[in-house]
Image (spheres, rainbow, N blue to C red):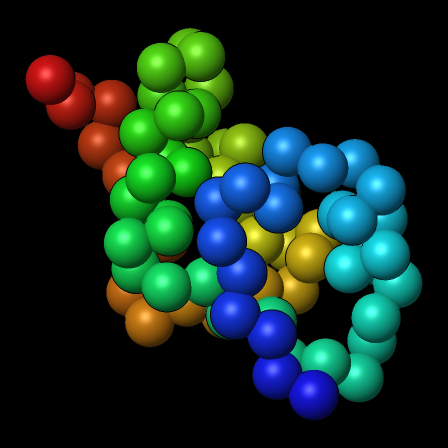
Length: 73
C-alpha cells in the first residue's frame, strides 16, 4: 500500500498513531506538503530537528531533501 500524506493529517494524534503502526505501507509526503509543514514548524519556533523527527517516526519518504534554513523571512 502507498499513502500520500497531506499536512492536515500531521495534527491528528489518533491518525498519527495508526500511521506509525502501519509497517508495510510506503508513506510519502509531497514537496509542497513538506514546505507547508516546515513553515508551520518554523512559525512555532521549531526547526529542522522536529521535521526530521516526524520523518523518522513515521518513516516518510519525500522527493526533496529534508533541510530547512532558519533564515527564512
